[in-house]
Every structure is written in structure tokens, then in C-alpha cells.
Image 1 (spheres, rainbow, N blue to C red):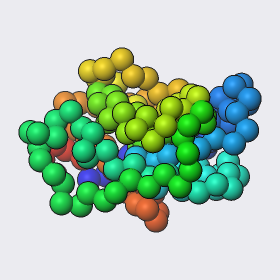
Image 2 (cartoon, helix red, strand yellow):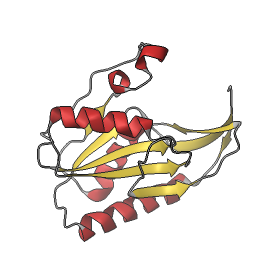
Image 3 (spheres, rainbow, N blue to C red):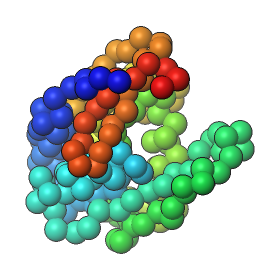
Image 4 (tube, rainbow, N blue to C red):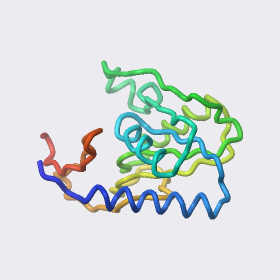
Length: 169
């Protein structure tokens, strides 16, 4: 395992991109939601950086996965927590890595169970491409192309860092 990227630079890119899109869309009080686990760590950091006062929400999308019947229940499943209504709110949905788009699809399904948001802004720290669904982040810290035997993993929460792993590690 090796450290891959400058986390400070990635967080700066993510923050700048979010500020730009919030200004462009004139969003004043977004609801911030992180996907467990890495997205929650990032939501905590972005909430502070963006100066948002409202607590962030946490999603555990385990029950919403389209492969749930094949992989079964993760023993560390925790209930999702959204301490606000999503109804007619502008939502920032944040995750650490996007690849196929399936995790994001599951997260959006769960968000809609809480209420119909006005909009969802998708922010991811790393974009690996390889989409299986037509879901793209609005903001990303870095786009990476990995070899088929490589994976990236956000480690944290303190300090946050990205590691490059060989498959099977």
C-alpha cells in the first residue's frame, strides 16, 4: 500500500468546485449528506470548510444496493441519519470514490425515500470512470485511471489519506 495523492490539494479542489456550483446555482443553505464511510468523513470536512451550520446527514446504502441479494448483509450496517428534511432542499451528496455509479444510484433511491429534493449535487473525491450507469459527479477532486489490478481506498478519519492498493490486499 502506498500513499497516492496530496489530500490537501484534493480537498481544496473539492471545496472550490462546490463553492463554484453553489454560487452558480445560487444555493444558500444546502443539505449535506455523506455516504458511509468515506463520504461521511468528507462531509464532516466539507461542512467545516464551506461554513455550513446545519449538521450533515449520513447514509448507509446497504439495503439499497442492487447486489444486496448476492452479497448479503454487512455486519457493520448502521442506520442512516438525516437530521433534516430533504423535501424541496438542494442536497450535496458526497462520496469518496465513484466508479460504476451503483453506490450513487442506491444513495439517491434512499434520499428520495426521505423526501423529494429540489436538486442533488454529486461531489466525489476520486472519479475512476468505468461507469455502468449514466451517473456523473458535478464536482470531483481528481480523475484517475487505474490498472485493472489496482484499487484506491480512502483511509481516515484522522488523518484522511488515499492509498493505492493491489487487488486482493
